[in-house]
Length: 467
Ligand SMILES: Nc1ncnc2c1ncn2[C@@H]1O[C@H](COP(=O)(O)OP(=O)(O)O)[C@@H](O)[C@H]1O
Ligand SMILES: [Mg+2]
Image (cartoon, rainbow, N blue to C red; front, side, top):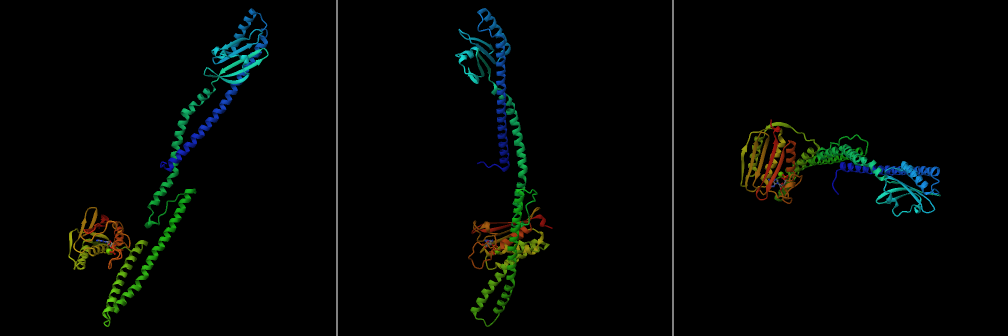
């Protein structure tokens, strides 16, 4: 089955229905016309016959008994009379008068008489009205047997041609013309009927997790489609409600975890400072404190992401030099990678006055620098900051372990880590936070990587972040 649009299917259906109705009506019309014309023909034949009977019975009764001279005269007269009545092109008339010796046949009409005579014995013809095919032409016969003879009247039967002629114009001109109109109008109407569907589909496409507050545009019709739109909007309502609940739950959960964690950290630190602890206890306390610290970090990240979901994050826009921010982070990084043989480079750094949330941008750059430092054992980490007319461009490249190709598409997902088993790793929230921060500033972030060779992170911000 071909893939036709609903619009086309509707149009074709309408046209099919129209054409069927057209033909049915035409057929009915032809049938009634046929019956009518045949009736008319038959009554004309009967009328002619009655005239002939009257003519014969009033004027020519003496014909069978007449002597040959008188008879010839009478036959001539009768032929003249018949010619007057039946001299038409498509008609034939024969009067067979019973005579003692042999029947007397008087014929008139422009149709080749022999056609009717061929092998015919009119006296043996069945009487009444009937159709007969002679030499490839159809004739309607009226044969009437009377005590004194037989009357045969025939007329060429061209009813079907007449009817065909009658309907020819309708078929040749009317049908194509109206069908074209129906197709055209149908296509237009179907298009109009389908327009709200197309518009709704377009609107539905724009509704995503992050803008569930949008609704399908109000379709005012109280028809099935209007019902569907209303139902869908209710569904989106419920989805929005459900998602809001989940978001609120994560936010509350993270928030609730924060206080006990802070207290726990404080108490662990206090316990750690106790001089009486054995070495073993100290080691246990140290490890617990590390865990508590990384848990606090996760909780902080979760709170940030939760507030980004609910749209609660209080963005604080300010104007600052992104190049000096970057240099500060590089300084910190120098300390971080101190023990590893890594060269930290900044081959290009334009001066860029940036407009945005300073704290978030700092967090972004720190997360990426931290990732590079964590996953690089030797070689280099290189930063670049370019400012062009239309874009601000930040590149962070390292010569570290890289990321397998199969992991790369998921790298910005929450809690996604390449090596889940490795101890001391982060939670996998860092890059999803980076992505959120970049998108909050209308920028894009991409990552390229070759395992064993290194990773490059590319960030661009549109120029309207410049001040
Ligand atoms: N520069 C990098 N080189 C190699 N792998 C990286 C790099 N940056 C990120 N990754 C991989 O991406 C994963 C997710 O990073 P991220 O979201 O920052 O989480 P986290 O740092 O908390 O593990 C990391 O676990 C790591 O496997
Ligand atoms: Mg990280």
